Length: 493
Image (cartoon, rainbow, N blue to C red; front, side):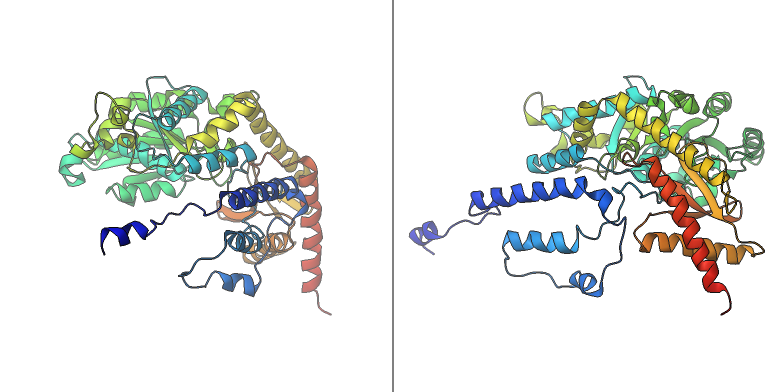
């Protein structure tokens, strides 16, 4: 091809050929988004996808272009109409935040700017560090501490436990590997600890058996005396006790370990003290309940989740490490292509030195914008509100003879079941599971279930700024209605 022919060929781009058409569609999308949230209470919490919608997701990769308006119509019809449901005021499954519109705008603007938060001298990097600093302040960590935004709680816990491993190994694990550790390390957590910690032990090369699950007391908190015994026995057997994991809000029931006692024991035994605060760390900003997490500020590392009680759109987790040098030394690698320069773009901090990702999304903006709009005090009040709502639900259950609480309600998680006279545990589980599934399928409410000390139960986790007390009244009424229906169906005709 000669020079003239080359000049006649247009270079391609992903920018739209007509920005005015894209602008009009964008306004439509924003209008639809406002209506989507404004009217969320009027829709089912969740609904099953019809077969034709499900088949839509089996289409092969597109080879030819389609109009962006048609693309959006596909999304509106097949995706937006069948959500998980966690933004709905009656979504209480597992443990989810319920997002917020300002945070969604922040996600949009972050994507428009397109910055990579691996590091560098630019505004997004400074905002990332600012949000980490705000998280330190919220849980009482010193300004000198290290920290990083990550995808969520599982990764935040892995960050903290990795720093603990390297700090307590007694050898250069980064250079020599875990096989060079002279005495096998031991980590300790309650028998209610989240499953992500097992994944962490495996990923760190220590293995599942490196984590001792310590028994819990009547309130499902780690038994500190049993912990002391486990540490002593491990030392005598030639292991090296390295880390105790305190849980600020267990996933099953919301139980909070005695963090002050664990901090003191960790100091006495020369252990790393890590707090899994993905559920409850931010109770530290709640005026009525902050005493429940007293001691979290003494931890060596903390994992927390802005996409839960700060209601940031997914994903947004945060790992904090008191010793910033230990944090950086665990992850930093500086090849020649990522060296700092005295001026220019590469003169900023390399944020990838504090975690596993070199490429990092701009997670901070959605958190920053919502905190600026509402202020941290409002988020604290919303946490207190959810805890009060859980206690209200517990009172409704206790007042209803057909229902029974199955675990203490410490914070915002309520475990209960519908009684069934004379039923075996197996039949009781099937009965309550059917209630849960019908609540979901009828679009009334989304609950999850679990097993606590061998007893199956339904579980309501209220991490939702849209929930009202009348939603909880409705839950109890509908649970009783469905229970009666199922019992009637089982009667002989």
